[in-house]
Length: 98
Image (cartoon, rainbow, N blue to C red; front, top):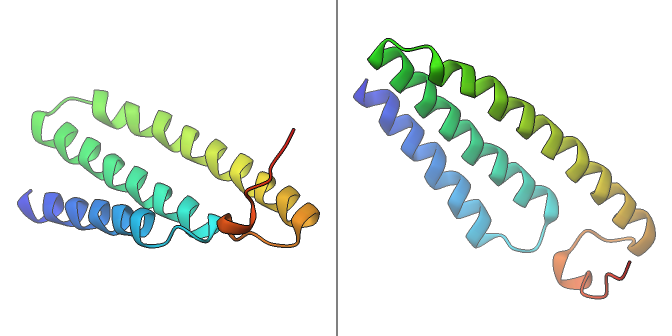
């Protein structure tokens, strides 16, 4: 069990480092959020198996649903912003108005 928790902690650290180190590209930020959600899912499965309860595994399906919706909406917004501004660099997108 410990090796799975270490794996999950490494995934979480990679996701956090992607959020903090690269603040220029929207796609990398979305991928980092997905990696953090993957680490949370891994923890939920590990602890559900350890405690013999299926609740954690049921929550994984909800988190996966939210992650899929976040990815679909996030990528759609990135495509729309790219069509309008011709860039996905966050520093160039400071003039977003509705």
